[in-house]
Amino acid sequence: ISSSRRFGMRALRRLKFRNRRHQALTALARRTDNRAFSATTGTEKIQRIAEFKELCAEDLTFFQEVVGQSNVITDTSELETMNKDWMHHYEGQSKIALCPETTEQLSEVMRYCNLHKIAMVPQGGNTGLVGGSTPVFDEVIVSTKKMNKIHDFDDLMGILICDAGCVLQTLD
Image (cartoon, rainbow, N blue to C red; front, side):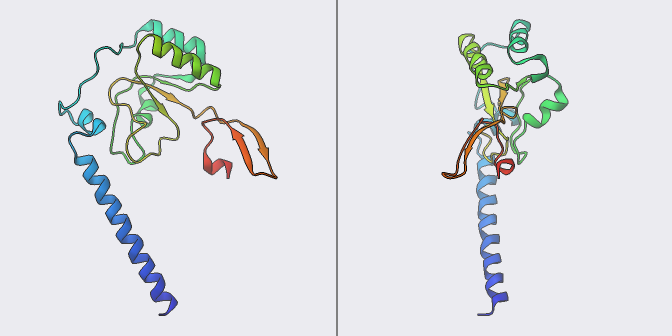
């Protein structure tokens, strides 16, 4: 078999795989019991859990004190990208995103949200394909994008110690 024909066969297999993957993702998005799809399309399959508190001015003030005012995002145009997944299949309704810079800030935010029963959703690069980092209702988005420091790299062992928000593409 010539190399061009082998390449053509590989390309055909890749195309078939991508088509199957697309079909699977489309089928997943069509399922009415999928949490994000159901919430954003208005079907009443799922409802907001009433025991979770809705945010108030006191909560916003606390978050600004802990992570800094510049790390509290409330602007709807900035939140738009954080409320959608990478493939634009799922869309959340969050009105606030927090971008802690240290694990101490993150820990304090988590402690506060747990104590006050505030729902939150963690978000890394927001490149997932299944909507796992997309808010459904009014959860607080906790983004790790500013936690991107490299602490140590061992050349000999190939071990890297870094923060949770480091992007693999950047580390490469």
